[in-house]
Length: 104
Image (cartoon, rainbow, N blue to C red; front, side):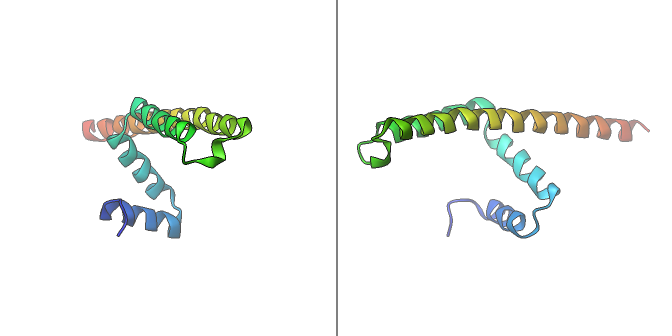
């Protein structure tokens, strides 16, 4: 049994098999209903700090490895912001379309 609830496991399975846009939007919508963009940044930062400061992670002994981890952190923040922007615009457009359909 995985850590994700059954509904998300089903989405993961569907995405792996079909890779359709509707499933992708469902995952994005669900994700941002759980986490705001600041929440994503905070959790990502906590994971990064944990990786950089842990005595148990020997891959972080070299400066280049630490740099790569920080690069991943910053780039993932950019990616999350881009996905959030697309998600927000998509949601606005869908809501605007629903309002037009209901007024007709």
